[in-house]
Image (cartoon, each protein chain N blue to C red):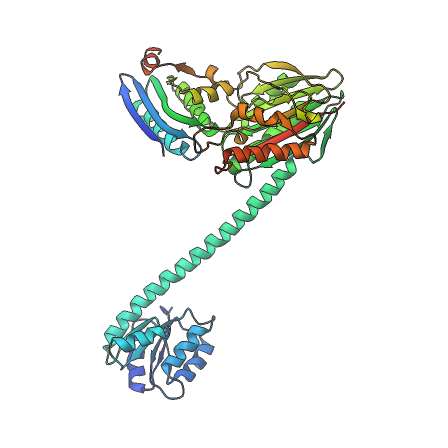
Length: 388
Length: 112
């Protein structure tokens, strides 16, 4: 197989012959033409990798040929070397300004031309390889981006549909993943006995792995709830599920609650998750006290033997529950302080009555507090109003 | 970038960390811990968190994994010198009860 195709364009037959001889002997396939127009015809039959062309020729000159080759997208990547008797720097620059890639002054040694051709083909080879790798990378990137977009859409689909309603509650959420997809998840499920199960979780880390585990957390929660029982049993079951199926450094903080609307009670397990706020009478809007639904329990997925503790709270009609993940309150500001639970509690003391407006207000005020720093972690906020 | 120093104290290894321990730097810290455990095979690994201003969930995950891997090789992991913000994160996630935590490095080394 030829090392490449070289088109030699010169009106002097002896020059064409000498170059052809050397190039063919070196293993190249050689096309020849006596002037620019003939060169274009030759190129119509077989596209060369490299053109070596004289400047002054009848019918079509070398500079015109060069301009046409470099202006046509189909041929512009062909390497163009001008062979010219016009020596001196000025004509060299002139030739390169036409778009030629290199110049060889006449008179020349055939060996010199050959050496230049060899080095040019090394360059062409490298360029081809770079282009090929670039194409591969671009298409890989496109594929990854498409898949991430699909995954993000899929993850959004895993969240409860809004406006959310379950026995005794109405709720809404704001879900702001740090990188398209995230490790936060929450769920609200109606129970057969007329109660409502609530779960919010934050998987360690970010991105695809965290997102996969968050899907696992949701499935595990649904399974546990289906098995009946109470938050304590759910926490144990979910912990076992996660210990079985995640790697060493992966776990989730979670808060699991069960509302009994007839008794206005909430039983819950806090598994290393930031404690939700109960805003007493908060669903009616205006200024209200709040209570922090703290608990002591380990994160899910650490160790299957670890204990959890169930706790009780009240949740009366008109109360509002603010569930969130730490990304909302753990942004370090320029003065190195963070909003934290205390700050969130302050800004939740007075919120609009409508849960949508309340959710917007919380996110906007948290952002304003952090500014100019932005959220860096996944952020989830759920406003859950107790209706009577 | 984290500033990490390691030293040997008899059969114990001490890893001291300075900076913010988050997602971006866990790989660096993981390598140091893994290498320390593999080469020194310490009976006791002390991680001094005095210079840590913030730790996120990936950092906590790394410490949990470190404890588990040290446990498996029959050693112990002690943490020491938790600054208030770090202590708060540990309290919130109840990890205070999962790790053996000491006030000073000397206590952590003695508490073996």
